[in-house]
Amino acid sequence: MKLLSTFAASSHDLATLQLFRDADTASAAALLADCPVMLAAPGEVVSDPAVPRLVIVLRGALADATGDGATTKILPGESTGEQSVLDGETDLSGLAALEESELLLVDADLAWRLIEEADGVARNLLRLLSFRIRAASMQLRRRQKLGEFYRQLSLNDGLTGLYNRAWLNDVLPRLVATAHATRAPLSLVMLDLDRFKQFNDHHGHLQGDSALRIAAHVLAGALRPTDFAVRYGGEELMVILPDTPGPVAAGVAERLCERMREAIVFDDMRLPLPHVTASFGVASLQESQGDHALIAAADGALYRAKAAGRDRVVVASGA
Ligand SMILES: Nc1nc2c(ncn2[C@@H]2O[C@H](COP(=O)(O)OP(=O)(O)OP(=O)(O)O)[C@@H](O)[C@H]2O)c(=O)[nH]1
Image (cartoon, rainbow, N blue to C red):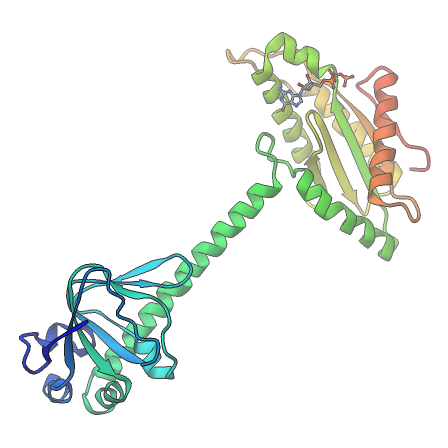
């Protein structure tokens, strides 16, 4: 940076600077008289990691890289470095001129004298910091929401909206561990749409997708808030029923089987297509059984439901 003049010798008006708005500008001007006004070239780094100080933009613009990829633009009349003055910590973040800029540099000691001696500067500083805290927490909230949105997205199946396999791999072992620890029952229902290849072949893959969405809708609409519906694979879905013993789970599966049979899939012309049915396998957690064995038991029961003619419920032995 190149020294242009002192503040007293420059033509800049103190009243146009945010920190001195409605403040005692006469006292402030006297204190700032010998402060250097520097000229920064475009792209030039203006932060000094060794010196806590205020940097006030008189002309041009600065970019303040916050370290997480975001950049704040500091325009004429605005300042930066207030926090480093207040807590004595130097600001290591990259502050650079976006264009040719004139800057007023105010050392920490002098900044403190301004705060103490020039009426109104302390109030302006508090306002500024409060605005920045508010903006920072708003940004944080926005990022948290975005993070939660992407987390949900990664755990849900895009076609049906049900939980996906990644969710299952994470949650089922924990549900099984809790059920064992609390000696509470836990049941699992596997279901698979019947002759779905034939349905796809006759009506097209898009109608097949609609049928899958309707099957998911049937599940979501028939379960308690504490139950979970998962898309396990292609046309294979799963329902997890915590605190539910085998005979109750069998009843739930019968109800789902009936609702699936009654659900109607519409084609593009809003004409109803043949009903899609599903086969169901029910298993409930046995002593010292793990999550894989529980899934295998429900899958085995589902296989038997298919072999017995489909559109029915089979309960695993012991459930
Ligand atoms: N439309 C659509 N079809 C899918 C999707 N995922 C899997 N499928 C289809 O589901 C069909 C499953 O066929 P199969 O495993 O032979 O079973 P099935 O025809 O349902 O016969 P059964 O299970 O024995 O009653 C395949 O044609 C897959 O392409 C999907 O996301 N959308």
